[in-house]
Image (cartoon, rainbow, N blue to C red; front, side):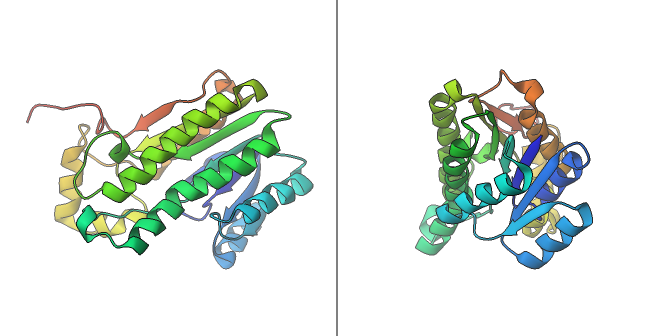
Length: 241
């Protein structure tokens, strides 16, 4: 398969690259040129640096990928951020950045990816969060953005089903990545986070990436419009203390 990875240099993005390298042709995208170029050089992969919230840039990504690899069979958006603030302490710039990094990048990928894949079909995987499925304090902005991502995926799955393009979502709980370091580096915050997950720990990025790889695979050709929780039971289970 020819697979596009947005946010390839991030915690989950790097795990996606690691798990997909060798069996697939990869096209890597991230905002910063230097770390992206280094990663691509190590793998001998094609790459393009830029802003994934930019619709024109995303169009150019698929154009470059088509030129380099002949097309695209799968795409995953591993771009995102974490904002933990109650609504009354969230600035307009905080809110907009959260929407841009989580929702707008996903919409840009769906928009450009659907056009690129509708002739031959393909698979698109987006990322949500357990916070979009269960009320969690101080998660208003991220819950709004990720909830919208889930709605986007379902609508796109319906729109492009007859074109053979599948859209699915992975919804993790807290994941041990550099993005979550502010939480995981604080022992009290980490223990509180672990206690919220019925399995008693947070996820590692390998576990979340495996779910995305599974959905990308053509072997899952009859799965579309689904939200797959990889959250240790956070959004669906309540255990006795």
